[in-house]
Length: 601
Image (cartoon, rainbow, N blue to C red):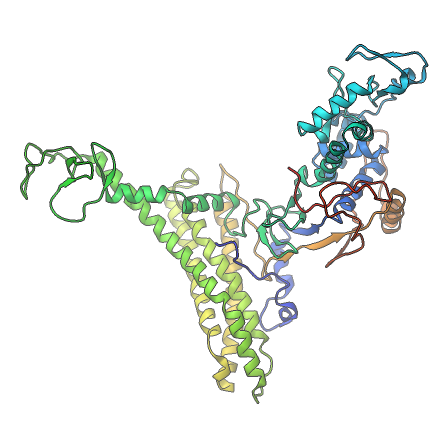
């Protein structure tokens, strides 16, 4: 579909969705959603630091490590706090940190820095004063010049998030505070970039957080807890699939939708048509279509050839034969190739035409919103007993969602019952049986969607009271039937078609009766580490008391808890971030904050 296509979300109809006559109760979705659930939150430039700080604090409290070590650990494990807790219980604290390059031993290099005698750097072999040398947590000590050059090279090479020690066979990650201090003395711009990469690692290295794919970029990132195979809406209004960042395409899996888009935009179908309707010139190999006349054709290059077999010939011919040429011998392989190309083209056009018909219907029905609102306004101003027309808008939103589902069932069926993806998954008999089952449900859904569209297009402002009541009942009943049909379609796809697959796994976003969910904005202001600690204690004190603490083996029973406040918008930290893409120099807290209008590249 086009980029400007819009499918109403659960918040579009507002309070109209409370109409008990139209929509199934919310609990009706729970059995389906209990299997795959997801909670989405929008991370803005204001809340990015807060989200990162909270995950850092969780790991710092459990493992009793410094913030830079907690960040290194989370970057290594892709900011998956639950994964860190799981490995902590399985491996223990020491092995967990060792795998991520986090040193937990005592820094022996500090003894060298306490002495007054010069230190020989084993990199440049220069003798430097102890004040001009730095020892990392792993114990290796080198001069500040060598450290700085090493840091700059690593940052420029895109390795800001895991700069390792220079010592051979040492996997320890360097202290980010030391990196920032040494680099900023010579190259403040590179130090700013280093801080920005560390901050954005929460998005770039996090499987559960992705940038909103809006163009131009809105500056938001989306965090999902639970099933990542979901479709949602950013606060900027863009709706997309979280897994592949393309437009919502359920019930197609991300792979099926990607293949369908490529097939629709590639030249493969043109090639199939050319193979089915043209012959290649034996001289210049250009495709030639015969539009009439005898079987002797002449290419633009001047070559004559027989259109039946494609062989080069002379010019002499009659209506029944070509001089010196005979092609009456049967060629089975050539006939099969032509028939296969025609059959594939016909099959593709069958699914594409129906997919396009429903997407075109959706665009036309989208224009009904304004027309229906005008009709409602005229009807409410009339002296009539009927004043409530919320059922019309509810039915229209149901029509939008069901039309979207119906349109994407055709790309799904094209690949599901074709030979490109699932050829070895089903026998021909099984494929035919499942295809008949699917197409029966698809036909039922299609029929009810068209009926709903027909009733919604009525000019009810000119109808009598009895006719309006009859139309209302039809819209309400059809809305229920269409919703149930969509649920049954998804159950058929998930349980009967995708679940039995043995050689491939395809996930689809679950069906939502109320439409795509709009992500809530996640925002919190962190003035300092002390305020962070106080806020965490006040919000999660009772929760922490119920959780067990780590023992000598690193086992933990820490549960999930969240301290972020979800709301529509926030201006608590407005003004803290600069409008430019670099750290502010006048930040009173001394923390480098950034304007994340675009992801760093």
